[in-house]
Length: 213
Image 1 (cartoon, helix red, strand yellow):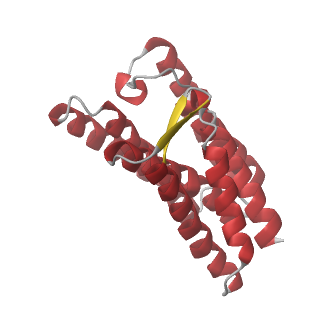
Image 2: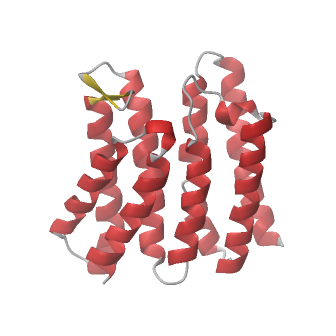
């Protein structure tokens, strides 16, 4: 019970920070959403450290996913979905996490953390920096992408893969760049927030195939 209280307190702190930030920055809706997006990143290592079992993690994630679906429908907590474009990103975010936990919680936690971190930190920081700094941009499937945002995604993904991969292999591997490159490529396809699904799942699968195995 104490383990889940710790997890809930962590989640509550992230939402509290986002609410306080929004109170003093009413015009920064996307940034508020990214605070939640990035802030949830450490949740998996925390749960692994607390030795929460796979079934409990699946049940917890399933409940959160259901709550997110209810919130998307009825906007009980508008902060989570308060963005200018139509997106199912939060739903895809939860669904991808559920699948990652199912596939890799016990089998390959390093692949799980890699996929989740690339989504939370890589995609999250890319969105923040891409919107904060003017740079060359392009439109793909009606979604605007920027040069600085894409570079941020690539570098962050590479840092994540190298850091986690090094703990397993104690050396550099060309496949680290391959995983980061494909994660960045897939992040370009962000229509309706689908990148929150395809990026973490693909990154974890690539890591499992190229690094763990």
